[in-house]
Image (tube, rainbow, N blue to C red; front, side, top):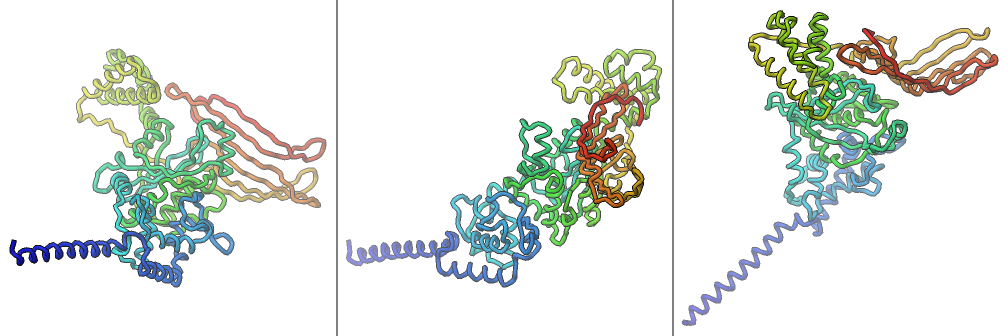
Length: 545
């Protein structure tokens, strides 16, 4: 081989090696910012950003305090999050400044699992810091938040609806009602059937008895978690199983505010809060989410002693957050309304037809007009479905349902039997839940003054508008009395006072019941003595209340 050729090949090989080395070096330089801030230059950038954040007191801004759920405590702050995994700083629960600094440093650290990198794990607080400090994305680790993106694909929405399932006396956790959020997609009509519900609740044990549940719920003995699940399951649970009317309040949050709420919800997906039945409950936590969505709102400030669901609905109304309201009556509410529109003899036919399809061949049915027949068949079908909603599959019931449905479809479509159920008084328009009272009287020739406070929330003699008819629910009512020449004494302390009066008829046979327990003074041997009392029982109420 000619010498010139050998030299040329050697030059090419050297050039190739040099080029590869340069490319490797260049690639390393490009990737250097993505491998943590080990370099002095990157450490300097982080230090400058930390100084800028401290100089601007970013940790005092309401957006940061809301994202970390800090509340003022004395001269400092305390986060209501009770999960150490939520904080980077050792004292992050008590120090917003330390947590901000630690989070800022974590932004520049590389994680082997991209989904655990700060930009993916705490996406809302990361974006806020990046925007506040104008951090260039090229300086941060390059990440692909696969888990978040997969979750967002399902839960992502552009509007929020606050949902209020009404009172349910037969469930201790729901006797005051409940609130949850629904994530809606406006481009899909009737999207509530595929929307996701955001629910905050206590992580209870099925082994807990009612008394243990009540104690732990009041004392913060349960962890509270945010859970997302399909909304149609909540409709089934509330509307059809627990027979609760549902009120849906569409909020006027913008798409950007909605997106901010959803990103923060991702941050809380596996995070524990202590759950308290009266204050730090489902309603309180949802208000915190809305405060994150729209900085500047102070929805939770007024809830010091209690956060009863209907009061939190009032708070969003007061803040002018409600865009529209939809009433979704329970299955039992709808059936009872339709029955009330029928004369008594036709109600009897409904009851008989829901048990025996041969009634459709009887003269008393066939002499009715087609519209009357169609309406009776429709109610019979709904009532049959209602009766068997929670029962195991029964071939006879399945056959009867099929026969009724076929008969219903045989009537001309132009025969309109739809009846719109007028919504009752909106829950938030009812009376307030707390009451302070003062009274004067005379006992045993001594004048006295009574001071009373009722924490929650409705008596049978109160105005029933907006409340469950026939229901009395009171917890934590106290009366103090001072007589002339005597000191102030406890006159009465009602711990629990529940009275459920529900009328029975041929279609529905609920049980009415009551329980009352607490302390009260009784006159014994001419002396007022404070005694404990417990009363309870069940009864049958026939007719209207």
